Image (tube, rainbow over all chains, first blue to last red; front, side):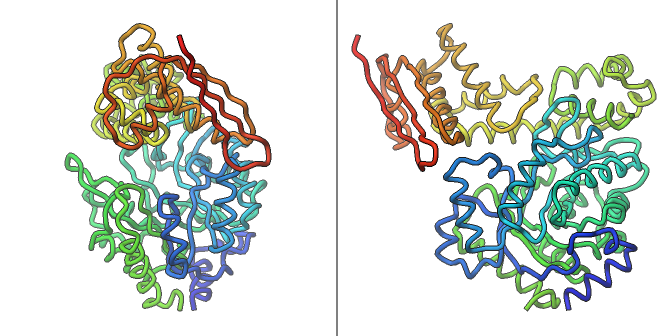
Length: 299
Length: 196
């Protein structure tokens, strides 16, 4: 059912299947899992059946010491791993860093994931490592830059790439479209899938005073491959995507809506700070799994 | 290409506080110094200064958290002063590298303060250097690192790790060696306390 929805969605979107030479449309559903953090490794291996797959931070395994390589091999022996990058800077007009890309390629070669992910952002420019995900100007020139960089990446990495929407703290002036149109155009031209961060969507809508419910049909749900969700916190009147709190009811509701509209094949709970007892994380993963099941995304 | 110039300017705005202040005071002149056309500078001047400052603050928090994760014992030893020292090193400087660069910069900063007797506690620079060397060794596949310290850093580190009170610490010359043999797991670490 999920595979049929994927193909139908991709065809409706116009040429995503044609442009994706890398089997993305035929990948099986993974279910619900966790963004791996070493601090809960022991708990994870006590109850591995409760987690369908893991997302790993790719950068942590670049030029890794033997202990991290052992950890990677251990995880790969028990779970499907999805590498998630932080600093490829796919929106950089200067292009991507070939050294970083080669390290990413080596990791992917080692663990053979069904897909991998990066953020739709720029993290480097003018010789500066920003250290965070910076919003791209929503312009055709920025779309062109992403398309060029994805083509460069595909010459090195053949495994399908999916792109994540980020938190937009700063809106860059001169935009020629809004975020939904920008994302849709990037996905249409690159053939990449969408890693839909539901919490980022919700957080941006809250901070920008946007009624997301009235705009849902404008987002490219047909391209969704994977989702992220988490809870944030309020700071000085701004909702911060800190991955530090339980997922709030509003995000659960949006996740349910998004899954209903998407051919999603995997949902990941991201939790970085203020880690609760592991059972609490598993409860949230189980809830996400149930949402996917209820909408027929997996059994 | 306009996007290249705009992204380079945004990167400076997000990471360099003095540049941020001067740009919003005179965007045409400051933008021109980075090669922006007047129209591009005027457009970027429409950025919300509050939003840029919020984003810059989130970058600072992220970098601060990263340094705290790399040097947790030093953070515990310095208490509230830790954030202040880290903010000094990341306040106006642009970062050209990745990963542990900020932690290395903090160690250098603390060593400078220690040399001029401006650091409290005085052994904090040694502790930071000791902790940073462990991290350095952990991220190499093979190494032989030798470091000399003025204070008994290994005991200090163990005490802080246990959460026990430190009390008064007398200087004691210490030599530490880290050895990682290619193909082997783990690091061999030895400490020698010298008299005199």
